[in-house]
Image 1: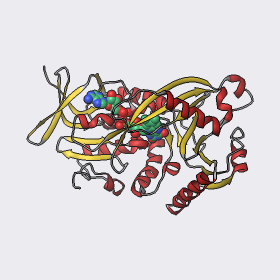
Image 2 (image 1 turned 135 degrees about the horizontal axis):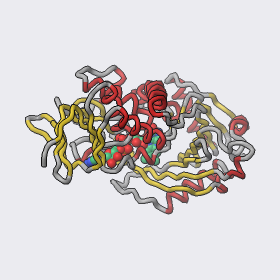
Image 3 (image 1 turned 90 degrees about the vertical axis):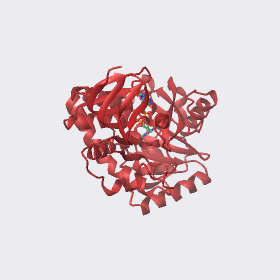
Image 4 (image 1 turned 180 degrees about the vertical axis):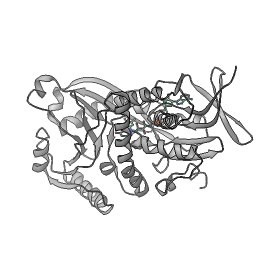
Length: 376
Ligand SMILES: Cc1cc2nc3c(=O)[nH]c(=O)nc-3n(C[C@H](O)[C@H](O)[C@H](O)COP(=O)(O)OP(=O)(O)OC[C@H]3O[C@@H](n4cnc5c(N)ncnc54)[C@H](O)[C@@H]3O)c2cc1C
């Protein structure tokens, strides 16, 4: 089949591929993006929390520094996209309230909060009563809480849709096809070939295929399945005001659950974390557990409408950090964003733009070289 040329070929059109394609085209490159699903991967399933504080955990200091640096990049890109398209991405700055139920959950939350304070992340400890003052519908059994005022959230589906519109507006050419392999010769990548045999040549290929990346390149990325529900607050409940005003996360007998409110009454309830290969089946047991945990956290949730159950595959790596960097003269890798791909999309697109221009990356990226696992 005839070859088709562009400066840059982006493989994969989730948030990472879309943000990279948008940034490169906005800076003047001729960009083509190939995606098989129409962004129906992890980016569509996600909850949209932009939560460097409540996601920060032991042993992930470099990742925390990156996620903290990602927030202003995300909000700047969101403003840029909204101005360019006239659409809203649903950014919310209400913070995250994390709550605990029994003494074990309370102790675990206290340990995590101490670690976060030492890392310079600001959060405010609360009693159960203070937590309920912030969110009056919380269960009376909530024992303690922590409020992270600087965590944000976004409507990830509105963000994906707006990114695509903005990418189209700056000239990104979209191809709805599945890539079967990279075109490689003399240790250099020069494009990709689809499963139907069409070749796309490019000076630079950017590989952003999420959890499917190992099917195209030998990298340490594996899928972590997340089952997640979308509920809706009926008007009769929200007539007197919103039932939930900010993201609430809870440890319910050791198991994590979160509720993320959106404008318009949608509540995203997540999520499981399972290593099941590439399986995206929604299971009765997961739906049951998510609803049960939500009920324990927010009893009124049993009156919400059930809208959707879905599973997405987080692209994970052995150290939970992304793989962003040059692989050869023609290939840039941007994948492995695991739990934080929505938050990291803008800062990743900046990094890919730097790499495509032949420049190096700042120190915040030093821990995320794509070759770090190969070196053992
Ligand atoms: C349940 C759940 C909740 C989450 N919550 C959050 C959250 O609150 N905040 C946050 O920041 N992150 C969250 N994440 C993580 C985030 O969704 C991911 O890190 C992010 O979406 C990864 O983006 P991506 O573009 O790399 O992958 P994807 O969105 O999976 O996109 C990859 C794309 O590549 C395409 N593709 C793959 N192979 C090929 C091929 N051979 N040919 C053509 N196209 C191909 C696919 O069709 C797909 O569109 C969550 C994830 C899940 C599953």
